[in-house]
Image (cartoon, rainbow, N blue to C red; front, side, top):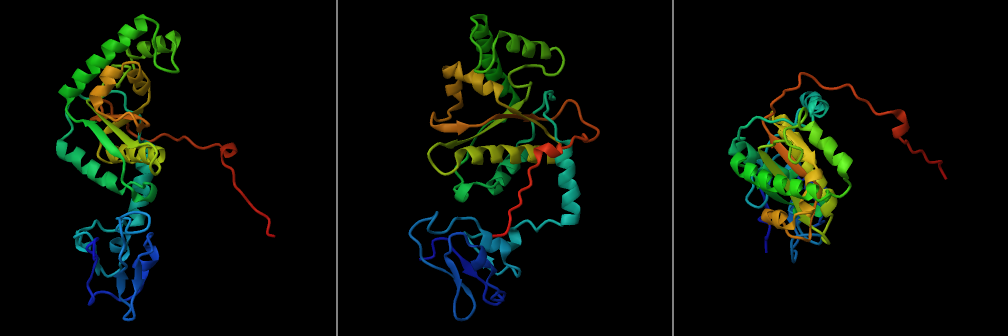
Length: 287
């Protein structure tokens, strides 16, 4: 039973065995003819096919197809001489964007970025991260106004998000005059919330990695993004408004990502570095 629709073009296959060597489920092997075969398995996951498609990706001749995905439809491997300086620049020039244009991001751009998040690393390739999205600035403004008004009502009663007191809250209010138009969501026209069920796999790591990848995808498309934790604490104080997000109570949320077209563009990257005291190199004595 070929559950994964694993197909090998026998004329293209050179019998190198790379597909078997990278299969995390250990269900691929070469037969007597030096051609790969997939063993039967009961279910997708740890003891079966991980749905990782490593076999398709590693084949040097494009002989392997799986799940109906053909190698000729994959993106080509990066040219590292070009990719390295590009990624270096994206990392050095990415900023927490706190001011945005009042403009929707084209939905096709958003959908493309979400599709690419399927390739973000996640434990056991369980693909359990879900994404809650507000992709219309009008809808975002409605949600912002509801949450902001309630936050102000609570602050008037000396009720603040966890970790914040009156002084810190008022500091953030002052920043609205300069750095950010609203202290809750930085005026972002859209938000993305990656979340995953607790108790299964690696939800915390998976959510943080997905959020990090999304921020870099935004940077690569000229979009600004900001990872926000303050609104998570604020929403905990207003469960009825938080419930509007329809995120299950047993899901981990590591951040809310605001994104959109930046109002202010940066001309260059910073020149920050990591102090040597923060780098710990390990060496072990033989024997």
